Amino acid sequence: MNIAIAAFCALLAGVAGPALAQTPKYTLKFNHVLGPKEPYHEGFLAWAKAVEGRTQGALKIDVFHSAQLGKEEDILEQIRAGANIGQNTDSARMGNYVPGIAVMNGPYFAETLEEVARLRKAPTVMKWTDELAAKFGFKVLSFNWVQGYRHFFTNKPVRRPEDLRGLRIRTPPAPIWQESIRALGATPVAMAFGEMYPGLQQKAIDGVELVYNNIPGGRFYEVLKFANESRHIMLINFQVVSAKWFDSLPREIQQVLVEECDKAGEATSRRIFELEAQVEQELRKRGMTIVKDVDLAAFRRAGEKAYEALKIQDAKNQVHREIGKLN
Image (cartoon, rainbow, N blue to C red; front, side, top):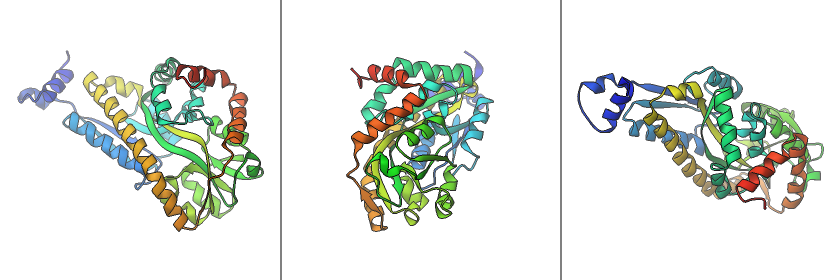
């Protein structure tokens, strides 16, 4: 056992003495694009506190909201290079490296927290995450973070795919997002998260597709009138760090980092679903109309075209078989 691991084990055991002076201090700068009032930010702070507590200060996570460290795509490249930096991202962007994994952000792929939990043990998903680490330098700590259902937020009611015809809807810049929104009936427009509000003001876009909890923080109720409950994507997020950096940590710290990330993700996901009803009521008070009579069956059928366009329908079906969603 090397000095670093021996010192860390002594620390965890509560042993005082000279060995503690040799305990290494590790830091992780963690970036996300959401605002400081978002439930995810609170969840990341809780994760950081739990990790620092369990390691008694051996690993400290500094959380940066609102893309303070830079754009997501730039951060991902720093992660690949081995920097001690992390990012809240999604399988859509990871699909730029391992195409099959993008299915996890496709239309109606997972629809309950229980289905997301089963994905963690799906052999095909485990293979994809291993490939991300071995070939591309991304260590997926957890994808136990669910941000809620994405809906269409527009200035006209949307009940069926044809209601989106001609509307320019903002999406993140990844193929599965683009094809999903196109399949569901709209014209996708790639745009950074922070550019959406001015984009709506200037009519560069006609709407967005986001989760309920994004709307108050971004003040989108000021520029959009309708919340259309299409539930077209259950937004599964990935917490990724550099595989090189992760492998440099003592095994005990690796275990704490992963375990606490999973715990914080599960707690945050459940909290988000609890908050959605409150957010919905707040949006009503702000003057938004909530459209609930959306034809989900029509949207599900339309969404299949996204998997076909990207040639990942077989991957989707394979994972669905593994989690019991497809007989």
